Image 1 (cartoon, rainbow, N blue to C red):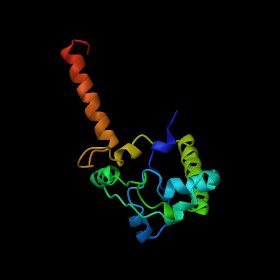
Image 2: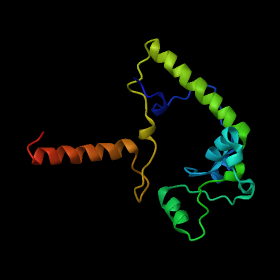
Image 3: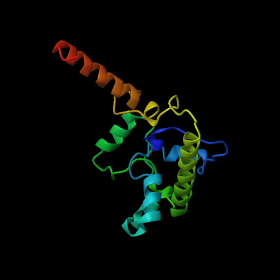
Image 4: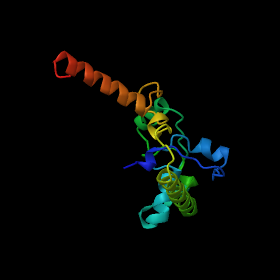
Amino acid sequence: MVNLAALIYRPPGQSQTRSEEEQREDAGSTHAGASETSLLLYFRPELVSPGYKNATPLPARNQKQRNEIAKATDWPGYWGSPRLATAAAAAARWKGNSTRLTDLANKILDGFDYIQMKRLGDEVVVGQPTGEVTFTKHNQEIESKQQEWLKKKGLD
């Protein structure tokens, strides 16, 4: 089994749907920003408060900024910019992702060697103070500590 969603695959011709200014405004949108709000508007619009249209942008360019925003007493519970959300953006993204993953699956079935492809974990950072540790590196550090522990216990 191949986890297609974990592989970073951007076929030629894939276009960005938001302007650079909108991308800066929605920076750090890991929770309830433009992307997640767009998905809800597309799949379950009745669950989205109309107030999203007037939500103040809260961009977070790194983990430190994300923590600072979340610690504020008046934090509304999101990062990024929900006001940029549209059902149409989610529909386009959903269709694009479906096409991209189907294309990748077909390439793999035709013999494409995906083993050396970058994974999402190679780019996504985890909650370190510096915000510079990727999931892959984080997992490697944990595995190394586990191996050291097993070796000390004579269980390796």
